[in-house]
Image 1 (tube, one colour):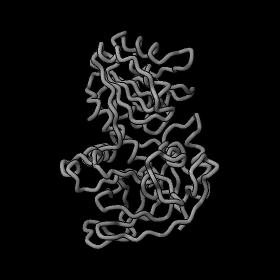
Image 2: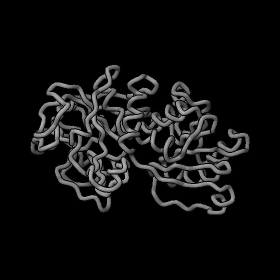
Image 3: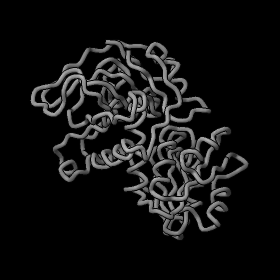
Image 4: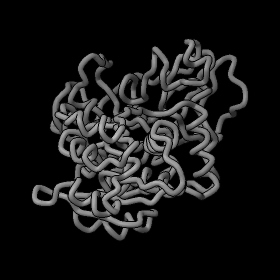
Amino acid sequence: MRGFGFAEHGGPDRLGHVEIAEPEPGPGEVRVRWRAASFNHLDQFTLAGIPGVPIERPHVLGSDGSGVVDRVGPGVEGWSVGEKVLVNPGLSDGECPACQRGEEAYCRNYRILGEHTQGSATEFGVLPARNLRALPERLSFEQGAAVPLVFQTAWRALKSVAGLRAGESCAIIGAGGAVATAAIQVAARLGARVVVATRSEGKEEKALALGAESVVRFGPDRPLDKLLWPWSGKAGVDVIFDSVGAPTLPGSVRSLARGGRVVVIGATAGPVVEIDLRTIFWRQGSIRGSTMAHVAEFDEVLGELARGRLRPVVDAVYPFDRAREAFDRLLAPDLFGKVVLLGP
């Protein structure tokens, strides 16, 4: 069957349509006919090659997807052919001690759809039945494909890991990436005062419409901490959500309030950072990492979306034959939200 991905690691020039075997569901599994998939920066890293992560090639990209149940494997109950679904891309074994405690994101065998397995930018996908959820009625297939990875990441990072509380201040570093558009909404939903820090022009009104109180633009002559510090009334920011990495994390740390928390969910612009530890211990701050979410957290944020308290942000939708154009859009400086690819 046709998919969009690569046969060899490298840059975008390696991308194209590939052929992989059509999967069949085994015991406890369901086959989904994908109606829509979406891209994340994780796809860019998978394409380049992630050290220590061997993958099958040709490899299909896409960690998010929605579609309809196409076939049901032996022993599966509760799903019928034709039901509309979206998927949780976090694949845990369901058996290790962490999974038994309901802490699936700590699973010793944790994998992610489209990174460790064939992804959703193709015709069919097979997943454990426990990873399927009914597509909320208010969401289209395109919107459903824009939900899973970014909203669970933002929800867990801000609510569970950072412990963001109503009335606290929260800075979201970046405005247009899909995880940032989710994080702005989540922080506002949790009752925080939200400032968005961006390097790009033209995103202010969109960020404010998602729940931000203020937007600041940083750059080489406008250091991040020199903007966040006055915004906070020179008290510092309680929680800072940073997915950028090397260019911004030192400034995020310098912007912390006493007892403040930086939560790191990615390093899109570089993973190696030099931090002045004196700021950390003097302000009694912390830097915490977060990836994906436990199943209960995924279901919690999906419930918020189903009730309309949060909404997926779709930047653009492309037909399958324009998949390369869709991937290029992911890297555009004026991106705001998710890039969605329709199924073949």
